[in-house]
Length: 440
Ligand SMILES: *Cc1c(COP(=O)(O)O)cnc(C)c1O
Image 1: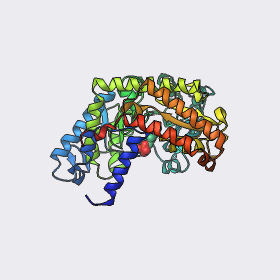
Image 2 (image 1 turned 90 degrees about the horizontal axis):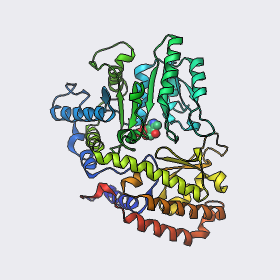
Image 3 (image 1 turned 180 degrees about the horizontal axis):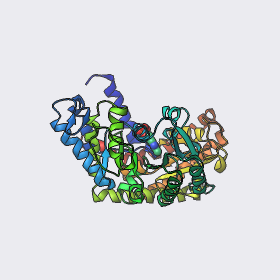
Image 4 (image 1 turned 90 degrees about the vertical axis):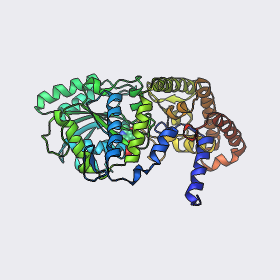
């Protein structure tokens, strides 16, 4: 096709093939997921839910969405799944909308501690509607459960939310459930226990991370494009009684599945993206295979090895390591450089990651002291322990150049050194092709 867009897509295929993706929220989908997304399903309007649509001609769509729902339920041992959220942010908003009235309090990990923008950052719509209270992390990087308990007693939240985008521990869901039970009795109101597992959902599905729904949590939201390795989108799974989404129901924890369906449509979205829902169904089936458990295990092993190798190379890590797929490096304390300079320099050698603030970061917002990286995408491409060792060495060499360069412009003096590393990265990357392009 002649459209310039297809030329640019080719350029992006090349960029993805020749570099190494260290951003922990990215991944590579299979060719089957790509095909489902690029299908005629995008032509169809299907407002409503399977068997309850506002348009005709939905017999195939109903079958597809039902399969997606059944597979998601199986994957997370849930009573109910809503596969329609267009994104992780939409999934979270729908849950708040399902359960809360304007002004209600939601207790969540604060953004500086590792929480997500959608958990009450003042720049979001949710923060203008609900009253978010933030809990933090301790010096060794775990949730400050004592603070969480104290804030819950003080504020009587309607929702306690456990979720994060930069947190390296396994949460103690049982402890949070105990706190919720106690406060709920005291305040004589039901508290919704919500887990936003956007980052670790694939680890849960792969059996290497506890499932919050099996520890008394009522709702779990997720993205489908991170460790679940599906199309870009959102997902909500929950426990409770599944009712008719077209009928009003009381705001009780038992009715959560129905409240969520109504909050997604018509509450916050219009017609579902059925081509994306089909791709979610394809990904969920892949996630249900035994090989996916091997993948999940390898993500965690790679992250562990990479963390240890980084430490050996002089990097100081938040929480001194990781229990999941995420690593947060304090480059300021390690080498006296800022996260933005380091991100820029790594980009020039084909290693992609993002600058990230650390808890209680003293650096400027656009020049944070850390970088965040992770292993899901590299593990999908088949990189293992040997390659993690190489990546840690490249990262050390680039850090040394940043120290000498002092700033972005200064790096130009080290063009030859950067090029040399760039070639080594490219050579390794080309040995591990991107899965999605297999059958093109
Ligand atoms: C990525 C992420 C989201 C948002 O997902 P989008 O699809 O980008 O809207 C929400 N919560 C957490 C914890 C995340 O990591």
